[in-house]
Length: 95
Image (cartoon, rainbow, N blue to C red):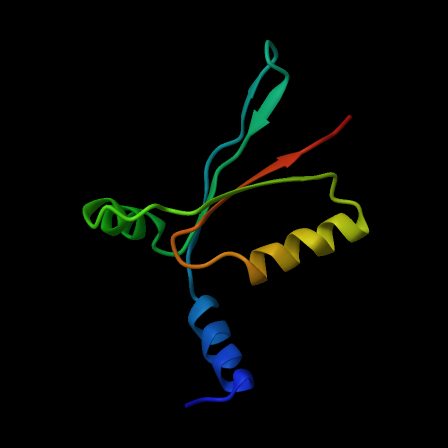
């Protein structure tokens, strides 16, 4: 059984080549909302497998203003809480 350090290294090496797909930024003046979707890894295939097996896909909601500590907290949540197939929705609050 690998040590925690070896497991972390294997996870890091597996994650590095994962493709990131950025949607165009959409904005509407009526709602004063800007949206961009970022997908990483094999998201669509994981969701399809979950739906076929009737397994829920975990969803998380986060809000941030991207100041120093908030950015560190967001990075921690991404690295600690998210697993393959999880969805994180982050709201960036300007005002």
